[in-house]
Image 1 (cartoon, chains in turn brown, green):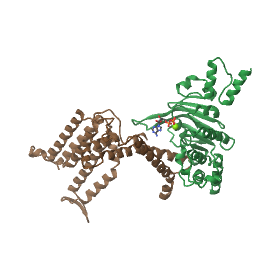
Image 2 (image 1 turned 135 degrees about the vertical axis):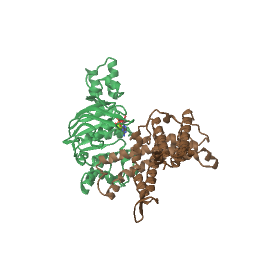
Image 3 (image 1 turned 45 degrees about the horizontal axis):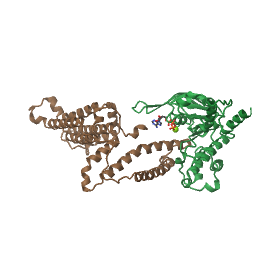
Image 4 (image 1 turned 60 degrees about the vertical axis):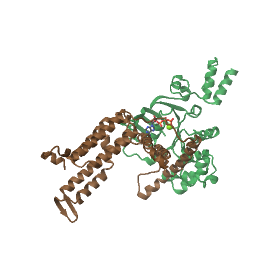
Length: 282
Length: 283
Ligand SMILES: Nc1ncnc2c1ncn2[C@@H]1O[C@H](COP(=O)(O)OP(=O)(O)OP(=O)(O)O)[C@@H](O)[C@H]1O
Ligand SMILES: [Mg+2]
């Protein structure tokens, strides 16, 4: 239960945990770009090294990061198989009607799956090391320039953080209400779909009633504290760009350069790649 | 109905950074006819303990027997267990859902296999027990009642299934003084009927002193006392350690003792206290 209240946040005292959320957001975007830049297996390998070293620096158990892949296993299998069967490659191994398995198709679908896995690993690292509140604060700060075109950045951020704040409260409430109705003999896990949906009514109705009550109370509380009376609010936790963020940015930049270099075989520095190299540089 | 808890242990979010041992080696027995109070500071594990009694949380380690249902066995008859053990949660009025009071109170009985006619009869009796006029409230929406009335409807919803054991998690929190008394008196009155065993969680020591014949004290997941209210409030070490405070009557008794006036009998409610003082004055 308590884990929901912090999203996926995994508390630890690490380099990454102490980084500025803004820097981490930028890094994640850079990482996504990096994963899309990678072309051959060598550069994919570089991206993998990047994620693994970031994981090690964050002191997150590697198993935990791998677990996040489980959530998208269906998408992985689906894209993998689809690409494998329908890729329009030259070196055909087997063909039946529109379905065609080719060497290029195999390579392409492996890369596709690899890219998705890497993307998920990198982005979950952000949610593992940064609380949802810090993420919204970081986003707000990064979106500041939009203020000049009259986007209510601060209000959007407040809405987001309130929503985030309420997820754990509501999930706790769901738990409590379900228990209370179970104590009165309600059963949620048997019967057909319709019966199950109907069984949820005694949970949903009190949930909505209390959500509206809470929203109303919160609005009153915000008003009572003169929310939005002053245009420039100060914050309790000031975000600071430190040496850690610089190291992170430089490290990621180095990896991006490496990926690009590997994509291009170091611009011919290795004129005749050995056969093993060839295998990886497809 | 007899309840036996043996060596109960419960951990929230085990093997994660949020791991929290909520109950640690709890053993006690509740006999038929007992009104047991459970006290302890906030977060000591009282609610977690009670949720075990009708299997709302999964038993991790230890043994629980309620009547003749063993909660460890592979196939527990949950329906029967939950019919036997009625549970009233903290702030139960937030769990009302039906469009009329009558339907809400009938929800439990219908789930436990009462026929429609039986459920209606049970709802009527339960609502009258909690001091509401059936004809007046039956067809109202529970959401148009006052907070106190909603609480009564929620209590009726539990009583309607006629449980043998009634577990109340802070039943009087947030009620006015008269409402508090009424609810506890109602519970005590119930004990002459089907419900023979009552378990009350409360932070109000006056209630514990007056209505319970036994009390257990939890402190950070451990059971540190299993005794009677009279003995508990004589043991200042436990009361101070758990920041429980004394009932008003006991406070007066202690103040008198400090002034050299020793009352030799227990003083757990106003009546006992006054008669003890009178005896002292006259004798
Ligand atoms: N769903 C949960 N997930 C994780 N920890 C929990 C959960 N529910 C309770 N706890 C923790 O377990 C401990 C015992 O909680 P419990 O609700 O049983 O206390 P309590 O004695 O009923 O307190 P109160 O008097 O405030 O109602 C607390 O430290 C609490 O933080
Ligand atoms: Mg509690």
